[in-house]
Length: 167
Image 1: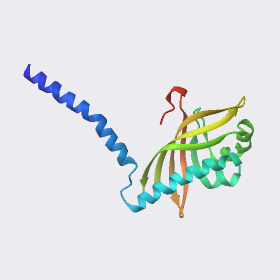
Image 2 (image 1 turned 60 degrees about the horizontal axis):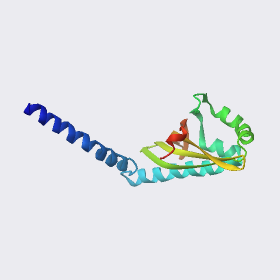
Image 3 (image 1 turned 90 degrees about the vertical axis):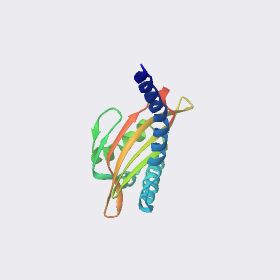
Image 4 (image 1 turned 135 degrees about the vertical axis):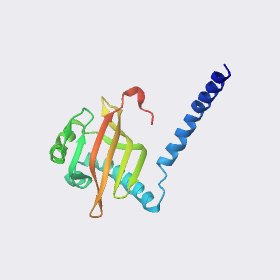
């Protein structure tokens, strides 16, 4: 009986510590150790934000610079597309979402030398019947630095159900 009480107390102590450990790990995720890693976190975050701000303009060059030629992009509906598909559909997006603007928050960036993995919440705002509506996505991207230039080599977008929009 004493053994079970002690075991129960240990399990309770571990369960009580797990949320604190998760918070500490989350804080570490966004704190890069070296100045180089900190620079990567800033560069990649800024690239994503600048890209999203430029998307509504529909300029082909914006997409050519952001995505690598060998990118693998999995859209929110599970369809995988190439860079050629992305470039081909710039005009289609502009027709389907003419008032859409894009922003992002809740960034986590993991730098790995010449690679970095980024995760963030994308916010697509668009007018519908005179009201601005927001649609949220969770995006994960892998950036690779080739010849001194960061580009996306893999991307995954997942639509967030309306009830789960908080970062």
